[in-house]
Image (cartoon, rainbow over all chains, first blue to last red; front, side, top):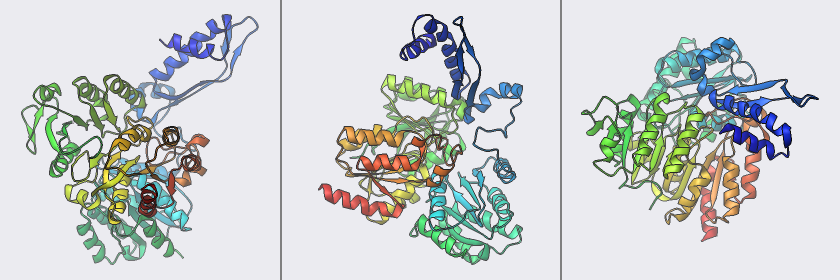
Length: 253
Length: 301
């Protein structure tokens, strides 16, 4: 089937004659490789034509889909590509590698996808879409985030604690903001316990270190009780994500 | 009315004995869902909160009408589970599982199209018609779900499960209820896009406006803009675009599997421009959505 698809594609560019019949198996092989190895990109560039009409592949580039790495473990081993090598724009920093280690420390929930920035406000934010929204909000208020991250899926106290310690350990981080969208599966009280424990273990006063805690949703009453006990500023769903980010940024002045 | 699900929708949960599926089943039942069975191979004869467990999908479909399935099985078994649901005639399949290779997703979507079935997800929290029923983890426990979601005129489509609830909560606080909210999933390939849900919302007499949550990456917002222009759609749409900081960070992935800026069309700036040109309002903040929706409903009336 791929031979036909290749032929039709090449023919659509106006190529005919022996060039068409000779290029077809090359493009067909490219399609086969694309499908067989779960690629998101398969490129031959340049493809050259010799005087005698033969084609020669001079260079190529492929991108393997992250989700499919498990399926092609053997091949990756054979090529010497380790789990730290991603197709992202730049290699991960030490801080980001440490973040990935925190996330992998147990299977409960997510406390990862940590990306390093150079500001002074540490962010413990989530989930996927909430983090994007909150990061934008902090910047819009003129805040300077020290990091991006995503928590969600009900991470354990241990994991939330370790992530908090990691962010607080980053040079220049003065305070952290703990914020999420209204949560469904993540328990507010567990995240509250985790970040408070993280502050204490890092030798910081939770009330002074946590600029704002805005996670409404499941088990919020229990969570808010714990936060109140430690004198931490928190807010419920009546305060928007944007407003909560603004309160945190204000405390950095 | 609503779209896709109502209180009469019957569905099964595939992978029902897994930890997440068990709590999802409890939460869905407590919200009024009609769950007629669960499937986990080798666990036939057990029950989960009174829902009988079977080895195969056909063990349920032979006995009773099954409108939908929530697929909650590990990534490497998902394709098979979805194929099983489709081949047994189930027409609405919600895939909760994340980290499925996109080639397999493409195969599932292909088979669904051939058999006239609809896939929502993968990597989604499902859907809810407030006051009627929900399928999936959307909104969490029933009492939390009732706090955030109320019946009303606004349809929601969102690439983020959590933000679906955040937007519903904001609408509810402003006195605007929802017809149906759909967490469409955050992967690069999904079963049903914004544009594919639009005809359903247009045909629904309850829905008077749409709120969408979007992100960088992919062509879904452009397709929605094209659809609206092509069909001269009168249904007011208000969009919120997150991840604006990503425009300056090409090649970095944030948020969801499909959220990466690789070319100009992936940027929030480009998407916002396309949507605005099609008459879609783009809110700067979530809390602006209710007023924008109210104004647009009033203008249309």
